[in-house]
Image 1 (spheres, rainbow, N blue to C red):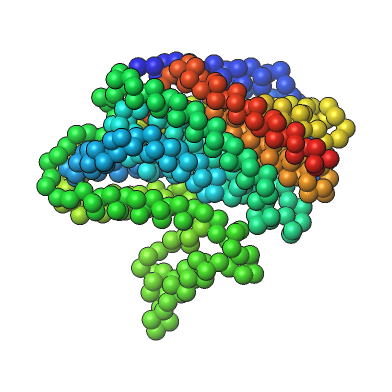
Image 2: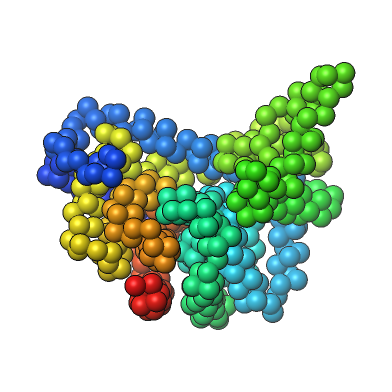
Length: 482
């Protein structure tokens, strides 16, 4: 077990940030002007309040991870999950590498288009069980899943977590919308990132299959239980269909297909269904309650949806009452360890939120770096994004902090705004590959029981390749933007 190594990294980062709060004054932007305030260090009493701030920030993620644990705990109790994994594994024999590549590319594309990346944990235990059963190592499996999601963030096109905020903050007129954000640069960037990832995990995957030691005895949220004679196919169909619904529900359809004046077909259909009345009584909306329309699903609703699917599996496979309780409890218990790391990865953000979302010493650092040149500079924005991304694991807060100096330096030039958006999302993604504040990374390392040192040792070459390709692309885009 290597959890201590991971916890040590988190705590060292935590106390280093506390130290910085003692020496760097708080700063914030107000009406496009930077205001420097006094140094407001984190004191002993503040340390007792930080956990409350963390829970406020991470509660939707915590609940979702626990519910997913309960889901797979019940799935294990159906008595068909092991049969499903064994069948699929046997069918993939000889096609292991193809499946590995398909998984990686699928996660990258979905992350790039949809965002809301923690929601992928709904299907992740199922995919992980297959990959580990095929003989791939935990490192390779994490790269093909969590790593691919982060790659998708770097090459985000429409993703709720990335693209939405970039469009919201860095657009300056109605012509710069999601529909015009798919410039060739973004497509080229995404293709290059996918190529590098595929080549890297293909090499590691081949080595795994040659090495018998990569066989995995312990697989997270997976127990060998063939107690039922029922078919596993309903489980497979419902699990995949549910994930597809989560993807469709999370995708920003309104931003792509319509505007506020012209709602999407999904929103129109939703409004018609929810508006059905019987003698003036809204029957559908009253029965179903508050259900967000397709395109507006967030983690809280996805957690409720996951709970519904859990109950559905228990009913279909007639899981006994005591097994339902035991399975749900076992799944939550196994995923409960992840909560500690979700909290740990949000500690730094909680420190910064002591004085407000963007009123903190990190904003002071951002303002100092961004004002080194008197005009827009690709290198400075890249370096500033890298530094500030270690503090801000929440992309919306990061963009909110970088917004004022970036807009001042780019003016109303669409090309520069677009260049800035590419810089921010790619550099943020690179940092999320290694930062102790990266929720996806830290949660993934805890889930796979991989030490921070082992992770960095195995991915530094990929990280270097990604950095070189991104720098070269930024140089080219900069030349055509200036």
